[in-house]
Image 1: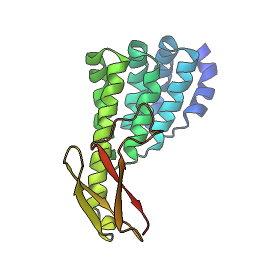
Image 2 (image 1 turned 135 degrees about the horizontal axis):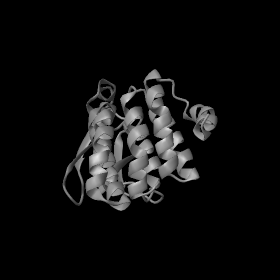
Image 3 (image 1 turned 90 degrees about the vertical axis):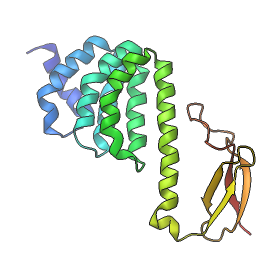
Length: 201
């Protein structure tokens, strides 16, 4: 019995993923991860794979994460492990969740061309901004949004058209800066300079 065999049950328990398709590759993936990652990186790797498994988009994103992320993390830094898993989780909570397999298939080539964690993080920020904007568009045109009146106006600075649901008991749009205090540093800026908020009459 190898050293990995003795650690495999604990790794498997932390991974908490029941797809049978991962079993034939799991030992080799973990052996590769042990060779490339620090102890903390290995823990982040297992936690990230577990998060990708929980999104409900099938086994393929999990397989890509297990096979490719150790090499990506070795090349760009172990912060990539959490960045990728959290990005997948965030995408899964939007109408763009169907794009997750394509996203996972592309990250090996993308990171090889970008060559640094900072550029990869910026690329992820752009992707999340696009997902946020398309999600907002989807929400405004969904049947649930149709039950509320909408206000259509333009940004006071860039003159781009902005539409927003007024919601129940809210009928008067109020404007405030589109990048409020407390917005996380990693979050991309809003598309418009100003965004609508609402106050009760």
